[in-house]
Length: 314
Image 1 (cartoon, rainbow, N blue to C red):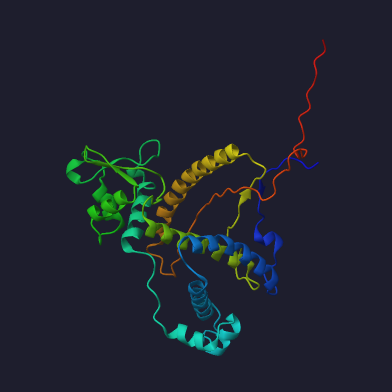
Image 2 (cartoon, rainbow, N blue to C red):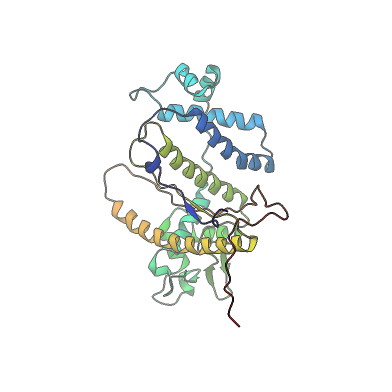
């Protein structure tokens, strides 16, 4: 009889992997196959078929080979890229010469996210309990000495007007426009409710960053320390208990997000005058629950030990 299920934290990659080694195509294939399953769901849901994704995969392979696998800073020939990736040499040549597609990020979506990040991290825009303060839409509506939404946007960027950002946040359901001329943030995280384009942008940024960290840790000739890429899991839970854990995870993320952004704001200010190369970081969290594939058969004995009861003497 096995002990009850307990949460398990994935070990740091450095504990189980050497810094350098040989490629492991069989293990990589198993991992990629697991990654493909939710990707297949996304494809089917949104009408992407195999020819579309094959072209995207060829493009990604060629671009990564060009960007990261050049020889002594001299780049790579079409033949070498074909050998590295398995993409036919004529496709390599075509993909290297075609115009790079525009980034998915749109200025207004990126700016809106940055405005919310500053709103929940800058002390001047917070209440005493560290929740986001409701802000006057314009300086004429604000209490003397208090910041307003226009000031918030101006501190992030002067390229887009505060009204355009406010309209975008309202469209996405992130803010509440109050009758007294104030605007309140509905949530501590920039999670678009109706903006499908923005949701896809966050999918691309978040999942690719997560996979990039995992790929770095598993690189046969990894340079540098492993990146943070861990998770905890628990199993044999009831639906109700899983929901409670999800609510706990949301609460923990909300607090971690605010603390991280406060520190990131300070770090950005300290980095302004640094002449060295600049680095961007992404810190995220996820929670997923799914029905376990193996269910106890009817009449099967529970694997959780029964609690012994002590009978009282008469």
